[in-house]
Image 1: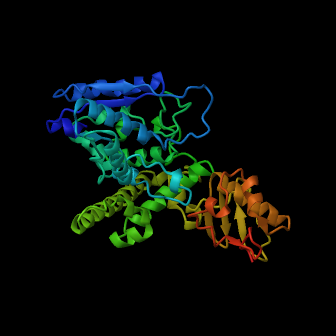
Image 2: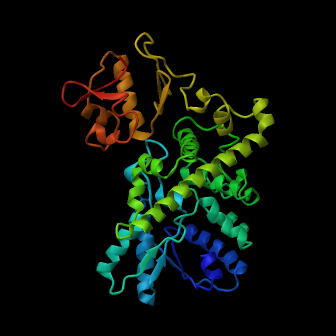
Image 3: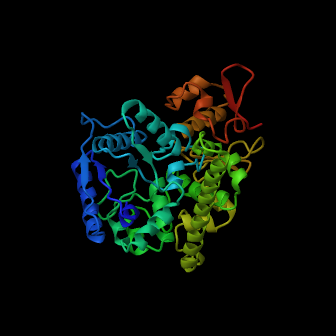
Length: 417
């Protein structure tokens, strides 16, 4: 948007507000934007779309918002005779590669994924006489590189008016970011990498992952998984990255020439590698800045800096002191009280939601002397909507290693022999 206006384009801004306070936040961002870039007045259209009832939704995910935004943009573009609609986000978020076993398939939102943009444009061809092209101009940039555009336009103070948190409910006005969701973690690293902590200090987060303790469970798993993902991809080369993340193949346009496909693939893998190296640079700098507190043990043991700077055993979200060892004569196993972390013979498995509850069912029954369980019993006890255990654990390292089939059809057990 800023780059487009700076290059002479005249963008029309489209907003969606499910509630009054959301529309107010958008206008709070629009006013300083107009004052910073006086070359264009940035006309703005906002559409109120919300639930018809006051009941809380059954699904808090935002997986369908991309279709909503794209539809509004395409309709307005068509009415104005424009041939292009932009739905922009950085490339790493657009790809949303799984950073741990729980962020797979429908669990991960891909609002600006290349495949979604391609499919929506194909749908538009069936609806509009001259369908507008849906594009993401930031597809090959990291979040840090996107934020640095603000510095180039001397508009870095706009960061203060932005919100990234995927869990905005019940957040205080002075702390509009929760700090532990994937979007907040990514934002925190990116603003630090861009040198904009002055405009996005840790105090603006309900929990500062670097200096405060991370609650056991999803929050700790998310932060550690984010760092481990960066460690994995920072040195990973092109072909290896496509083997590790086959989802990248969906980003290649089938109609492109071989040379264009290769160019796109290299741009994607280079971007992911840059992202990983940026995260590690930020982490290194944070460790250096807080070295005295780390040496003096004044940082909480479960803060991110303490977890990643200590021995590898500490870097894993290992079982808490309340974890219970199980029959060490057969296998060494320990687990956190909520079963989000299970350690077997030194190998750590992380789980959230129904997966963690399913592990709790297996472990409790195994302790009771009932090792083989019917999958429907496990799924029911775990309150899972999956019809098969393999669907629940699909993509998890635990499937086929920690959880294995029994000789009896439909029965499974923990592999602890």
